[in-house]
Amino acid sequence: MKKSFVFYSFIFYFLSLIVIEITNPADVLFNYAIFYGIIIILEAVSLGVSYITYKIVNYYDIQNKILSRNYTLFTIFKLIIISAIIFFFALYLSSSFISNMIISDNSLEYIFKISSILILILPFIGILRGFLYITKVKFLIKYYYLIASFFKFVIIFIISLVSYFSKMDVLTVNYCYIIAITTFYLLLLLLLFILLRRILKDNYNNSVKFEKYHEKREEILKRIKVYSYPMIGIILLLMMSFDVLYSNFLIKMGTNISNIKNYSIITCYVGILFNAFFIFSIFLICDFRKNTKKEILNNLIKALSISLAFSVFASIVYNYYPIYKYFIYLCPLQLLNIIVLMYLYNQNRRKIILNTISLSFIIKQFFNFVIIHYFKYTELANYNALITSSLLAYLIMFVILITYIIITYKLDGEFFVKSLFDIFAQLIIVTVIILLLKHIIYFENVFCGFLYIILGMFLYLKIRNYKKRIR
Image (cartoon, rainbow, N blue to C red; front, side, top):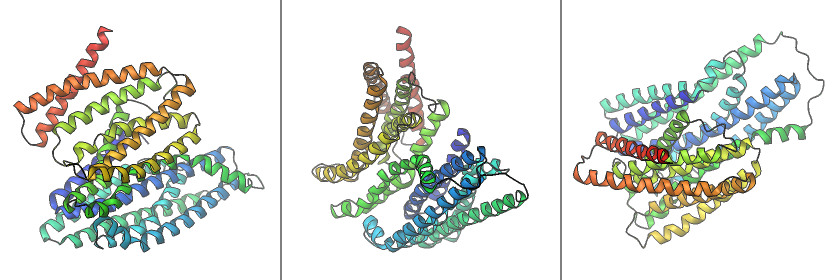
């Protein structure tokens, strides 16, 4: 799928966010954010399943091993069914407990019970999408996310208009959103299944020679395991989304419930959406997918210089969600880790990827408890402790991975460290200028904020280019 279409699909997610916020009370956005946080994780699972299925189908089709392909697909299907049923009952039965962990009452229970149905839908959408990608309907499957995000926006827009003019209560509006989106995914699953039946029927009479016996079960499971490694990335999503389960703990420590809701909105929906949009924007401008040994450090420096500068300037002037002024600093570290993980995956260094991500997740949970107790002695909001622990966990992950790369591939670590100091020096200069301008001339609105961000990036890039010419 073209990166530009992934970028455009985020536009519809942003429009959905704006429509919900303009036409509904804050509680509606909070409830929808919790619901959509579950969808984001399941979409990631679905994408991983699609990748595995496509790789399996493509591998065996090239070798004309249809029997092995079909048996492997059956094995994947069986594993997905077992996992989906287990997680469905786990979420459905624990919905009341999770609701109390997040908001100290059962008001979110219905969200988790309805959302549990998506566990039985989205992974199977992933299987069908992966299989259909190599068929005649490749064009439709290729632009799945753009099409899906567009129709979800249309659904949200219609419900928002109806709810706004009919003055629906919060509970009814959320039921409408959640049931409509769940129904949309169910219809999408049925559509993909109908397409699959039609294609299989068209190809039924085609005589294809294939092997008499399929590969051994051990070989098939080994191949599935190899293609399953990208699924480890879901742990990165869980690293922060799990933080909403600390909400009840924060409430008992005296954190205001409205602040808890704002934090949950940022953690589950707005923050992930904005950060993903920004990361995809950078990937759209700069191609980091084909990192070579020679280019990896230069690409990391380029990504850090752009993302960190943007985060600093946005943090200075962005006041719409005050919590996002700090949360946005996760974006540079997320981007750097994605680039390094992509490089290591292309180098078949899967063991270090699994070990580092798993270790970072454990470190993150440890830091949560330690830093939360420290923050209660400060005047800062307690939920900032969770963001701080995320920053530290991502930073530790990046240090481990980049150190491993520098040592293993004998890269110029001294050059990387010097470049970091250059970036920070340039940022300090431009930040001082922006703060002075903000103190003299500034209006509290989004338009003025964007102007200051653009001005900051312009000055920053000018200084960088000037230093390069001097060298």
